[in-house]
Length: 255
Image 1 (spheres, helix red, strand yellow):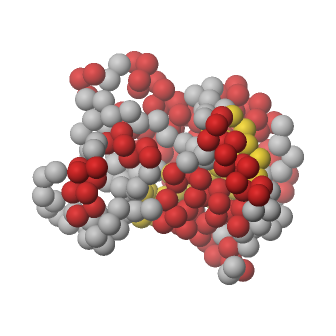
Image 2 (cartoon, helix red, strand yellow; image 1 turned 90 degrees about the vertical axis):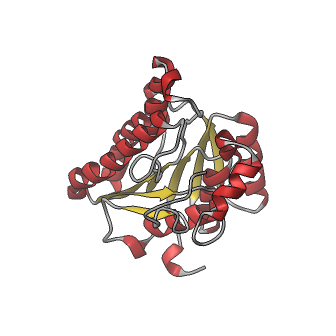
Image 3 (cartoon, helix red, strand yellow; image 1 turned 45 degrees about the vertical axis):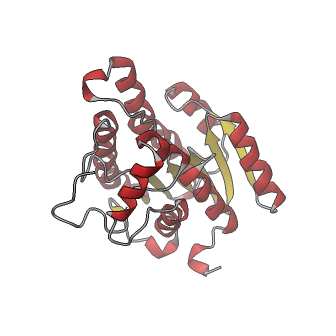
């Protein structure tokens, strides 16, 4: 493995870890030698991930957690002895027409996608201070900051907030040697993409991507590994778009 992606001796926390993009992120850090704490709400998927990684000789443990609960987040972080990289990847985004969004749906979307990023980062700061610095990474999205998708107004608003958090937190935390960055995925082939429609729709979406395919979880994980690595030590307050060029055309044919 390239030395710049050597995470030996580092501890990494990944939320939304048990499938799709999160699983790829966990696998990438684990291959780099990191101790990984995988956080997810699905106990069965989490157990499978941990067992698979342990079988490969990787140091991964799981923690089931509802990220809409600030108290649970605080308790998790207080119990850690070390943390070098925090990756908030978990997201909540049931496809819902704008007129059907209710207070409960909006509250949970904002709590998981945006609120948890605040509480995770605040809880990580004492650990970062203890070791002289740290790295916060967030999975944002092109939806919200750059483009729109019908039925995702709640999700788009949360991800626009994530980008605002990244820039402002990076400015405030730079004095503590804490870098804050994010990745904006486009359409990625994951089980969660089933929220957006059927296979035929996904095929049409892929055909509209300049690189000719949907993204894979490993594409997003690779960007996260770069931003967490020493190769990115002078990068903070930024988001990296990983979308196969999907947001480049000025006019896109209607889906």
